[in-house]
Image (tube, rainbow, N blue to C red; front, side, top):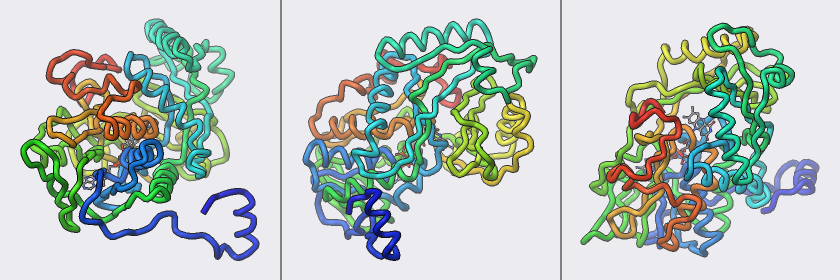
Length: 417
Ligand SMILES: Cc1cc2nc3c(=O)[nH]c(=O)nc-3n(C[C@H](O)[C@H](O)[C@H](O)COP(=O)(O)OP(=O)(O)OC[C@H]3O[C@@H](n4cnc5c(N)ncnc54)[C@H](O)[C@@H]3O)c2cc1C
């Protein structure tokens, strides 16, 4: 079934009786060429690109809950490529280019909205750092504009510019950044993978990884054993637990990240605004809710819910930046489990077990990475070679200490990234 304007019109006129389910609900087979553990954004996009680009279609995605029930459906939907470090910069640039053609590629409305991401700066030093970052982005063909305080004031007159603790000195605007509807991205990839023959198996938790003589043989699940020649682990916040099934100890800590949404309001915030000094960022959803969040809850946890002190901290930061927000009523808050590496950058690599691959450590950056990560992981799983855009994401950088990508210059402390 293809989506088109004509199709919507026809269905509208004929009682919407012609729509079919987006994907099948197959029983697991006894054996696959490849298994992806985790039906989040990264797992689904990996399966899609394995099938589409590499012709591997005897694949299953095993998801312990339902597709899109993890962080891919819990994030604040920001998509951008304004990273400043060698390795990350190239990867996110690649991912953004895939985003730009994604809806046509998937024939699915992911509500991609390149409304611009503005990072505010609050000191001369921070403005210099943004200028360097902007130059790096521009040098590799991405867009970046350094704005004066006056320009930011014209764009966002509702911000508090005279705030004495963090006066606004200007900002770095990345116009091609923006938002996309998170669960539609999961559904679009799921539908695209299913159409190419991939089995999407929900309510199927992986409980063990079968390894013989250093070679992966398959997995144990709540729906029985399934054999496979290749297994990719893409389980975000649960990466340490699933890797432990293969005897691995990952350099990952799992922390909670919270987000909030207000009641629906008329259009007021038409960009994504990031207020790093206050640990706060915000955008407005197409439904009108102000969607915002802050930093991690700093303790390690597998509970996908947050706590009141961080809630208070985020609300205070919002009020500091834009006092008008105090009039809005918060409707909901929620949390997701983040897989943090010591340098805050991800891992896409082979493991010491032949046929076993790992993709994790996306922390809060993982939604914008979904297309690029799936593309790169599929490339690695299919060819055994690292994709050039993700070549820096080696696991052994934490063992040998070379090639670390400490994007935020906070050192090797998971919860500070
Ligand atoms: C509040 C919040 C805000 C965020 N905001 C942004 C943002 O604005 N921009 C951005 O780029 N990123 C953001 N992120 C980060 C981003 O959402 C994640 O990095 C990314 O979604 C993680 O990858 P995923 O989609 O594959 O994860 P998930 O959707 O969590 O997928 C992993 C899946 O693995 C499954 N699984 C786990 N264990 C097993 C098992 N044993 N067997 C089978 N299946 C298993 C889980 O059920 C889950 O569905 C945010 C995250 C949160 C929580």
